[in-house]
Length: 385
Image (cartoon, rainbow, N blue to C red):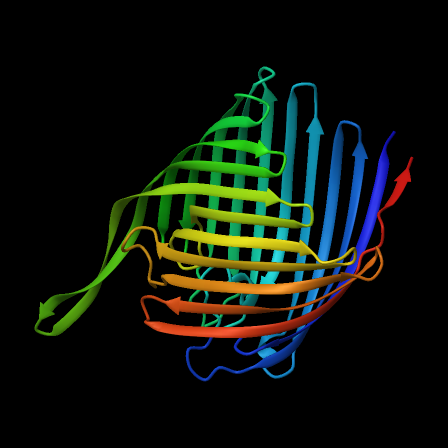
């Protein structure tokens, strides 16, 4: 029997932020309201499902009205399960302003312009034996920014494919080896990065309450870019010219991923550490190292407290293929208290601290944010037919 399940969701958040643009000088505090409307529809049968999730987010600021935005999101995913094969795919569209997107990318907030992002992911998993399986995957990404003379953002695209092999040593331990290839391009700066990454790792359940996942590997990239230099071409009359040449370089770096999670009767602890290469709006891929932790404690049947903290260090891959060096160090931590008023209604309040250091510019900025929020999410409505 087929089934259609729908679930709407609305939420409203009020914030006070001491420095939303992370200005190193002349910080300006603002108040804002952020309202979200979301709708989830899932069509499913025993062997496949299709899920559609549109969202809209409206942000309004009391003083810096340039930060006002209407952001739109749509995702469409599907999966199909057969006896020994599983297929899945997802398409997503996002149009949101850079004041939000660049918090996890460039950390540049001097201008707030719309960013449009399209992505497509597909995967196939095949079970070879009771212990062994193989998978293949592919993805495509295209990101563009609205033109603005103040902007330093650079449009980019990335395509990737890969495969992995998994083997279960026991019911609690899985070994995995993964290879992937990606091609990162920036048409505005004629940069082209082709990368190969190799990774091996394992997942292990120490006991019923502790899970550990670890992988390590190597990324190797070939980077092609154009270099412009001003040269003297004539003494009489005196004349200079810009000479553009094609250049290339090779870059290599380690990648790793460590996650440890421990569950208690009323609490959860999680630690994560990863080193990855990711696309960026600054004309080159970035190598990022992230260390973070999360804790949740159930105070009562209706009240939870959550704590989180992270440190991110980001450096440019390669040495010369970008027009703007933008290495960063970002420290964040915060906490929130969640109160379940009813199964459908939830309230929360908390704070967040953020500190960002621009290594190349030698500047540091920080901000503190307080927030309260209310969310309504009714129970899922299942419609069989």
